[in-house]
Amino acid sequence: MWGLSMIQQRQRAAFTLVELLVVIAIIGGLIGLLLPAVQSARESSRNNSCKNQVRQTGLAFQRHHDALSFFPSGGNEWWTPPTYRGGQPATGRQQDASWAFQILPYIEADAIWKGVGSDDQSRSISAIAAMIPTYFCPSRRGPQTVKYTSSTAYIAPTYSLSGELTHGLMDYAGCNLEGTGVLVRSGSDLLIAPRRFSDVADGSSSTLAVAEKRLNLRYLGQKQQDDNEGYTAGWDEDTVRDTRNTPERDYVGDDDGGDKFGSSHPSTFNSVFVDGSVHGLSYGIDAAVFNALGNIRDGKVVSGGEF
Image 1 (cartoon, rainbow, N blue to C red):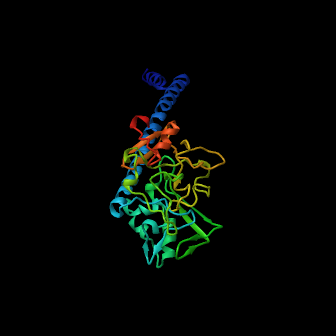
Image 2: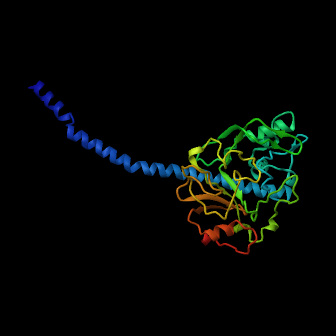
Image 3: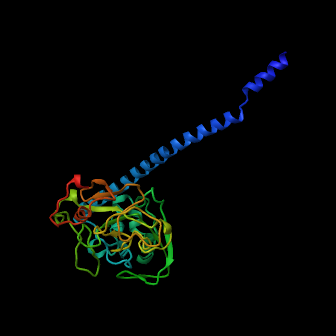
């Protein structure tokens, strides 16, 4: 009797095939319900990190202005590398590299800004190759470089760079390529001076400074038209975008980002205005409103409710 009772208990403790399938189905259903929530939580965390980086960039614009009495410029040409003179990085109109290079001292990247090496040329090469974590949106990618041999030499006032170079990339762009924004094309052979707060006639709280840029995800880490020269490139779609173009989300295709702002976030892309305020702008933002945000003096003061 005792042995029979033990056998019966063991039989009652076992799962039938039907019960096992029901349990598996329940677990699968729970995973299906939890997975989107987990993904949403992760995206929310990444988006917050991106916003913080954009905020740091906006504050760096202001610190640059506090220190030098003007904003960084948009740089000179895509083929003009960071300008060093006698071991020191040039500033203002004498600096041919991008705004992203010019604000390095104000995002705790002073050592990269100063460069590494015994001469100006080697300092420039080291700066071009640097990966700046603040310049990468975690929803898209981690810090990344691309290495290639350019058919055009990178020419500074006192030296030139050629051959195979490593370029540190970037996920953000300044405003704007049409030349009506807070950034202006400026450099050692140009007479245009960088903008000041007093130039922003429409108000710093309704004028775009920097935002995420749209990219083709298929070619990340490869040499593509708007993601190759990297964060130091002056007046180029790598570092400056066009507010006449409607922003769009990242995609997978055959072309580049089309000079557009955008991101890998599902419904908005992060931006910082001249006053340092951070905004998540919708891809569906009105085209006229977006263009007005990029123009420092068109007389169209945009209110918060419009973006």
